[in-house]
Length: 534
Image (cartoon, rainbow, N blue to C red; front, side, top):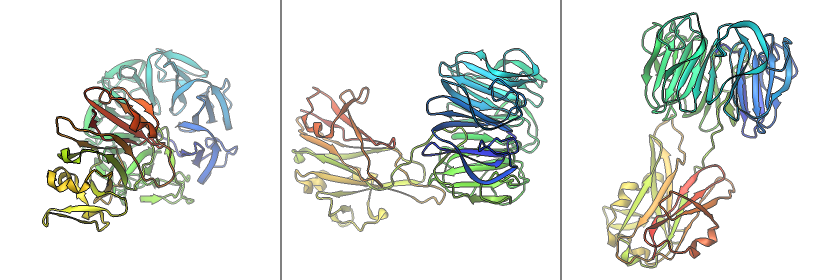
């Protein structure tokens, strides 16, 4: 896009803004040209979208509000007054919004797509073109899942994950295989699409298998195809992509391993690579692991896993939010904590403290083997310690063939492979006691941040008549937390809520297993011990 202001949602759902404010697009009641530090705008906001000079926000009650430039009716408030400096309510029951330069696209809760503002390039997708602005949202089509606006074009994902495009197509940004001036009706581009970002004249597409495709204007290499040739159909760029965001002539890419990659124009350091040299191939940015990304016209803002905000690129209008108007060629910490960038869905944080799993077994002589199931990020390691009292923690020394006191170092704990290779005689010391497994995670990658991604720990009992009489799960948190416990008797197909003290009173499911899941208030799930029941 070609915006020069930034909006962000903090974890308390308050909305903040910074950058260019000549049209009142920050919504703070002023029209001063520059705000170089974040200013609070609105409470109870769950989604925000930014146009060139206007802003739309969806509140927690699903009401839609707008402010900023409105010369083409892009706010949908029934007038075309040029500047609206404070939030004005537009409509109710809204699911998602996206803003172009002078048009806005809105999806209602019943999946109907609406549009307001100017439609001079057919960007509404209603088969018409008009330079006269629509002052109220008008209905375009149904069965819409998501919508994404470029400056003058619109990309639409329907409920079956098909991607459609309409609007300006002078550089092939619609991906329809030709360069025509406009396409006023949505044309199907491809299937199995889950996310799109549309820039000034280029488009980036992520499919359901996490592959990234690009089409459109490529004068500065912003498509990442190692040339500066425009592309009229989507070209595959890379795999394992989680999110993408388009500036005017550059692209920021977040991969599934949370690494940040940038490509395209770099005249103001908007790639964050420490120089002003353009790239035609995505290059990794030296920064910690990233949670979400957002691009202005010539700038980039990112939120890290540790909830630090970094900005780099053009900053004449204060769009980096660092209190200056100086450009930054490398990531600069803005020190604005815990935000959600642009229209990103809020991502939960995870505790980094050890997680302790507790199991009780009254037939330890039948315990044959341990097996640990885990799902952890790349470049992150998982280890374990054992205890019967949570005071003294032990690990098995495979050279000495004996259990020794843990040295309280992650690297000195036991790996998943070591635990699963323990022989039966090595675990008899548990001797019918409640035992504990303390789970650690850490990283060797300076760019990565350790996090609990979801851990399954279970004990298999191989015997004709194993007996397990009780089961529980405890956990250690950075702050107090209140979990919910769920029980499944059909191998995780259905879950029934249970109180923790009810775990020892569960009725036998007959043959099979009982699984337990603990859901913490931050969204983390701890899948408990799977065991036979008699």
